Image (cartoon, rainbow, N blue to C red; front, side, top):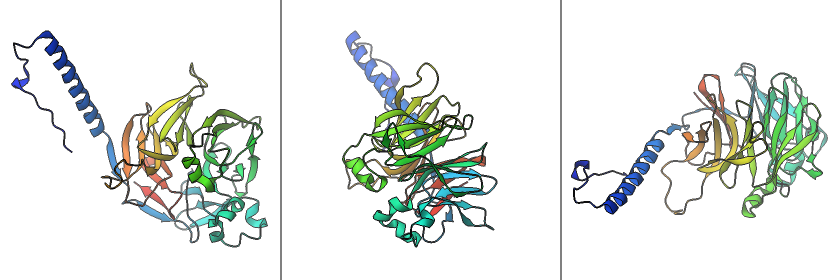
Length: 358
């Protein structure tokens, strides 16, 4: 719908207008101006269509590159549906197994990647979600939804379990993860203390608010709870200046900020309302954040198809939306990772490929 602003009397006030009338009309003018400013701000939001992005197929039999980590010139690392972390070594080397959990080789029921799609097997196979490198040590940290916080050395191999609980409460659904490159500390989320990942829908339907924001201290090897009783905390990332964390909450479609330093240290506050259900959040190259959207918000008029299908937004450092990503129907994203040269790598927990937008 097109909105137009109109004026009468060529913008001049009638001479007979009373003070009260002038006051009312001044207020109306202010409202109109505010709406115009809002429209102008909305028009400044850049829209980028991802449907023409390059597709990097995953190996046959696996899917779900939920989160992405990068090392070296061509190295791309991602957790997939059979519990492994894979490495892409470039077109010549292709995909290879980089890391796996103890069950991957020891449990006889895991005879094929496809068996891990069965809900009763997923908890045995493991499901690596958030992945990030400590660039100083070369260690890769992994938030496995079922098996806990893990890490593996620069050469890969069997991942070591670092923690499976905090404050005596077991992890049920580890999800997002980020590493402070200055200290080596790891920040991560447990989306629910009641439901594991395969009961993801129950978290939403029951308005579960038992999630936690957690910290693994690289020096003491201890896990502390930074914030508890959270509704579906998902992705987490450290701000560029390391003063706060940004946490995406799948429900209620919002991002929050947890202050680590400064006068607000320890406070948890609303950072942004989002136009969809967010998954992971990553820093962009300008001090802001990319937030992947797994699904748009439910519409009041479900019969009317939305004009565009949103799969991600970029927020400025102040939480204001400055760019949106769109895609073809049926495509969902779980991560938007910006790399050098403004390349956008697109991960999805549902698709069998990784996208690249240049």
